[in-house]
Image (cartoon, rainbow, N blue to C red; front, side, top):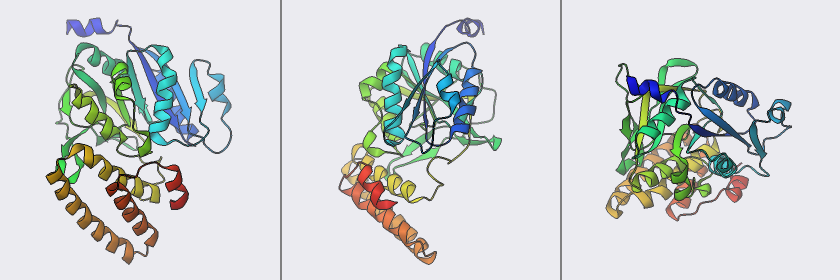
Amino acid sequence: MHHHHNRRHLNVCVSVILVNYGQWELTKKCIESLDRSRFVDIRITLIDNCSPGPVPSWVTRRSDIRFRRMEENTGFAGGNNAGFRISLDDEAEYTFFLNNDAEVLPETVGNLAGYLKGNARTGITAPAIYWKSDPEKLWGAGGEFVKWKMRYEQVDIPVRNYSHDDGIEVDFVSGCALMVRTDLFSRIGGFREDFFMYYEDADLCRKVVEKGYSIEVIPSETVLHSVASGSGGELSKLAIYFSERNRIVLSRDMLSPLKRVAFMIYKSAVLLILSVKFLLRHNLGLIKCIWRGYFDGLFGRTGYSDVIDKLI
C-alpha cells in the first residue's frame, strides 16, 4: 500500500457546503465532526435558509467559516447553490455537499478527495451512509436506476474489508453526502433550483454521467445520518408534493417516450392506491397534495414559493 501512504501527504483543499434550517444543534455537531478531519484542508461554507429565530453566537464567532443567511428559504438546491457560489473563493478542486444532520469520520473527507484525485474519470464520490441511531444499519450507498419506476433501487454493499481505493459504480448518490469536482459542478450549472427539494441530486447525477464521468460510492468511507429531520417527517404535505412532482418532471429528461408512458401508467396506479389509503385514514389534505404534484409534474410546472403558500 505504498501509494496509499503518499496520499496522506497530498494537501487537498475541499470546500464543504452546509445548509441549515432551524437545526443549529445538529449543524454544530456536523461542523465539530468536520473539524476532526485529517490529511485534508477543509473550508466550510454555511448557509442558513432563513430559519426562524436568531443565529446562535457560536456561528458568528467562527471566523474560519463563511456564513450567509438567506432572505428566504430557497430549499436544498437554492441553499447549496448559494453556498457553492460563495465557496468558489476557496479555489478548492473538490466540493463536498453534506447534510447538516450528518456527521463525518476523521478520514472521510480526505479519502473521498483522494479517490477523485486518483481517478480522473470519476465525477462524484460518496461515502456509505449509516443511521446515526444505529451505526451498523445502512441508510444508503447509492442506487441503480429503474427506468419505468423512475426510482433508484438501493445498492447493497457486500460485507468485506474495503480499502480507500475501492469504488462501486452507481447511477445515483444522495445529496446527503456527495463530493463533486468543483469545475464539473460549475459546468453543469449546479442543482436545479426550481425543484426546491427532492430529486435535484438525481438530476445532478444524470448530468454528471451525461458528461462522461462515473459516480462512485467508496464503501470504506462512512457518514452517520440523523434521518428525515429536514422535511417535517416522511409524510408531510411538502414532502409528498415535491417528490411526486419532481420525479414526473425529471422523467421527461430521463425516459424515452414509450418508457415514459409505462412510468405514467405505473405512477397513476400507485397514486390511486395511495388515495384510497389516505381516504380511509381521513387524510384528505394529502390526497390533494399527491394529485397536485402529479398534474404539476405532467404539465412541467416547477418552482416553489407560490406552491408552498397554497399547500401549507
